[in-house]
Image (cartoon, rainbow, N blue to C red; front, side, top):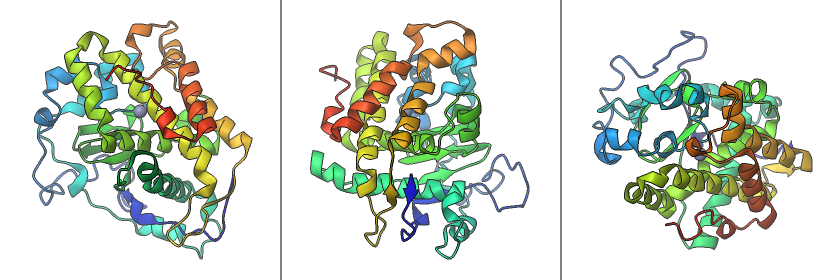
Length: 334
Ligand SMILES: [Zn+2]
């Protein structure tokens, strides 16, 4: 993958919640302790999500954290997410945002910006949203609404409750935002064996797939199906997750056509090796692979994201067709 040197990063699409650089390492709750006072009223997590008990009982992580991951907590099962569901927490909207550092890193005057992890991720977000701002209208006749990606460190409060880095990157439908602790990529590389740069782009594209599902109402439909049919809650979750993988593939297909705000292409080239890195990452986060790593055995009934093979297949289907309408992982289930 080669970035286009003329592409300008739009840092307004991310929010840096990690606290000022160099100030207080390991600052686990950036907005805790008085910072939340100015936020908009807290969102009633229980009300929004149909009840804490219902949610936990109804199929787990995928629903709330909707995401890719949850999987880091797999060893401990849902328990790993207990902290997420503190009811009555404020949203992340009141958290202090300081993008100064990212703006400096991404400045066009910085020749090293394409080697900087923060900045590369800004470009990925820009590219993904550039695609969907047209793709959603073209394919579904719906207007795209931008969603920020929040870089956090350690833990963060969101409309979906409080989350720690341990749950991995996630999308919260309640505040329409992606949340990621970028150190997750180190884990993805080391523990899950998916080290490529484009693995990172895949992770973000998957999360934005959930945003698209939120905009299209698919996520709400899926949640209703889970409530109607709780015995199959995990299967509905798998369908949702595989669709997000497919949407990630759709973006990858069009990535070289995406542009910055001035219409300059963001990527110069994308190679088969990049796509291979995304496919490898999709496989690395399959439920069977994760279960095997965590427990040494496989329990299909507990899957919420799909097997490695399924995740790869759906990413590839999205990539091969470049058509989000081909991402019907639900069949007639909704
Ligand atoms: Zn997901």
